[in-house]
Image (cartoon, rainbow, N blue to C red; front, side):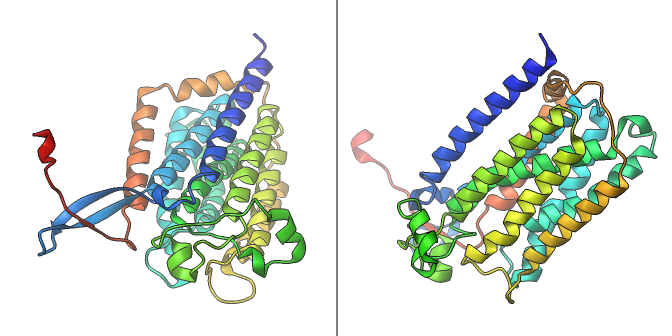
Length: 354
């Protein structure tokens, strides 16, 4: 079968599955029951009960997003012929830098301890990817130099980021963070556009409730817009990537995602630092300019064929499966153990079932 047919089938299946998953999420996760996944008893509270640690759906969807992005990164690089060892090492470098950076940058900007930012993680990845790839080209220990083309890896990286960030927006809906402005505070045309399509969060432990008292208030569904725009951009860039348009895929993905990050902040209500223009918006503009510079500096790489079937073989490797499972577990525990909510637990026996 023609490899273009396999590529088209892959994109179609990915688009349908992603669309169905996002639709399910944006129509449910703003409800209060979708914030706490589980509560683990830690120690006695002195009143016959237990103080508990809350495990959140934020961590669950964040872990899903990281793994989804990593999967797509591995598949696209494999499809373009980048050796698995190089992909694994580069993925480890990026994740080791971005996961802590997503918290550290948010702490610096927002002056809070228990916060995360996708924008900070992406900015970090974009900065470290080019030198990392160039270093790998010069290190025969990792991969032959002619098999690690920078523009191919960079394009795969930003496409994977957009996909992961789109899926990760479901985590924000679940936790009630990254929320939009109340419709009543928006311009008439925005009110008309989102009438009947707004989010109405419920639950006193959601961030939108304790930070701005906006639970039960219709707000602009920024997270849903981000989810569909980012994943849609990623899928469109995948099409370009699979047809060999690596530079175009790279620039278009960064331009759309970071452009939206800049403009979407004007319709958001959550705190993102002081000033009319936030630090995240500045990072978005820098990212676009940096990407344009990279486009000018990096030479185009031609590929005789980009075979999605080759990339899919990478994720069937036992080492890839184990690494992805570890990534899910680490991300789930790192982002899912709630630091801003608590719980009181009690246990009893159902005597009618003894």
